[in-house]
Every structure is written in structure tokens, then in C-alpha cells.
Amino acid sequence: MSGPLHISIWGRNEIDSFGLRHILTEPDFIIDRVLSGEAEARFSEWEDGPDRLILIDSPSVPPILPRYSALRAALPNARVVLLCDACDMDTAKQAFSMGIDGLLSTHMAAEPLLCAVRLVATGMKVMPSEIIQHLVADAPPSILRDKNHRDARPELSEREIQILHCLAAGEANKDIASRLAVAEATVKAHVKAILRKLQVDNRTQAAIWAINQGKIAEY
Image 1 (cartoon, rainbow, N blue to C red):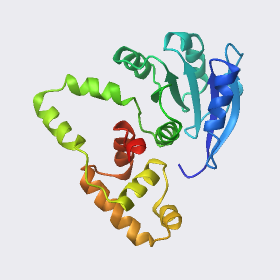
Image 2: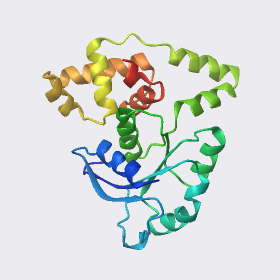
Image 3: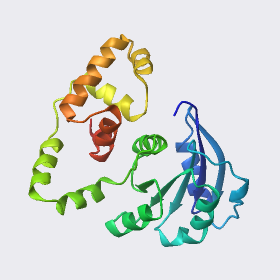
């Protein structure tokens, strides 16, 4: 995405809604509206598009069903993220079968939430690491061996760790170079090293790896 991301927040109550607004107050985000509880929403009046994201805070999937079908009918191209308490396999199957773009846990910290929202805005599907671990538990042994190899904590330098944080935040090489006061060519070299060490193909996969493995907080 080249422009700002327009976000609508629908929380389970006023306190949660404005708490999320506070977390999502970022230079590249525009908060279009904040709703809470059983507030009435006229989705036909909302603008649609991949640069629009609706964040719904709900205990689980069933409570959002009455309004979700109307939301999707009016806004087929908007990204929808569900932030909920119940992040198990059944919840994930329900959510993604409905066309939800991201499933996040209410127990996650603010920084991973921001990173996950940015990833969803790029078209990626995001889910909690515990669901990925569950999928791995059911995977064939050959896949497990590859997964265990990839999950081994790579030896990243301090500078590479800083750049990994920036990648997870969706920053471009030019912005990273400016932030760290280094040449853009230096950033490119570090990104290449990070991709090699994480055994991933691109910077988006590196960001997803960092979030799903909890490395943003750990490092």
C-alpha cells in the first residue's frame, strides 16, 4: 500500500473501542470511525476498498455474525480483522471460511497488533502463533522437520534485529536507512542476510515470522 490505511474500529464497549483507537494512532493510519457495542452501522455509506480495514473486537465469532454478513455485502473489498478471546482452531476455521482477513488475540501486545494490521493491509492472512503450532502438530513428519529447522533461533546481529523490527512495522529500505542513519545499500545487505538466516523468500515473510514466533517482543 502506498497511501494511508483507513481504519474503522468496532469494539465490544466504549472503553475497548477508544483503547484500540489509542493503540492505532499512527502516522500512516487514518481512523475513520469508532463504534462500540450494538451501535447501528450503515455500511452502505462506508467507503470500500483494499485501503479500508475494519477491526472488530469480539469474544468469539458467533456474536459478530448478525452484522458481518451485511458488512461484507456492502464492503466486499475492505480488509476485516477479528480481535477475539477465543483463538482456537475452530474459531480460525469459522473466521477464515467467512472471508475474514486476520484473526488476532486480545492477549497480544500493542506492537505486534500494529504489525499484524499492517501485514493484513498488504493482503496477507494473519493468525495467532498458537493456531500455527496446532497446524504443525498435525503436519506430516517431513514438514515438521523443516518447521523445527526454521524455528531454531537464528543468530541475528543487533543491527539485523533492529531492521527486523522495522520490517515488521512495514518500513521501506529508504525509511529504515534514515531511521538508523546508515546507507540504503547497507540496509539492503542486512535485509538479504536476514532473509537468508530466516530461510524466507521476502521481507513480508520475515515480518510474519517475527510476529508469529513472538520475536518482536523477545528480541
